[in-house]
Image (cartoon, rainbow, N blue to C red; front, side, top):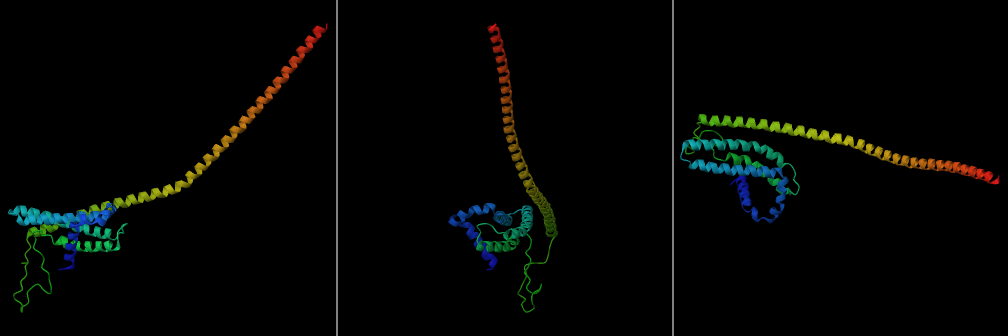
Length: 258
């Protein structure tokens, strides 16, 4: 049994008993922000679904139905192979709360994915493993190869369809990447503009505070001036009234004296 098979079996066993793992249940919130865990779970579920479809195709009696299911499986395999580079990039990113052992195990899981995907039966003859040549040795005539070397038009047609699907998917990924770069540049420009506006806002606040203080002082001085003007006017009125009273008193004195 190869290392890939061991990793696959260990992964399936771990998934089976995940609900009994208390520590894993406590750390389940990590995957909420873990893009690798989400994408790997989707890919793994698609692999399981493809295996089930392959088993269904092997039991299908109608040839047309089996061909349609196998074609769908080949498209799924092509799409899953496109996800492997993305998983490799995500596996290199560090995630908070992830141990070094789990980080190393992610790389092993990603390395095992291509073989798991290629191992899904899709109705095409498996390529023989070459160890030193295409034909059997003359000293060992009992050795036979499973492949007869025949590839029909359907095989090449599906391969071209997979290639077109791959190119279309890559184009969509490029468009998404360009959009993300544009958003990143816009966010960076907005942050820089905000950094430039902060000193201006601080200066405006300082000027507003200074203007409010000056206005308050001006109101106080104006109030004092008004009070002084009222005091001066009252003093003049009092003097005028006093003169009038003195005049009346002098007049009455002269009248009474006569």
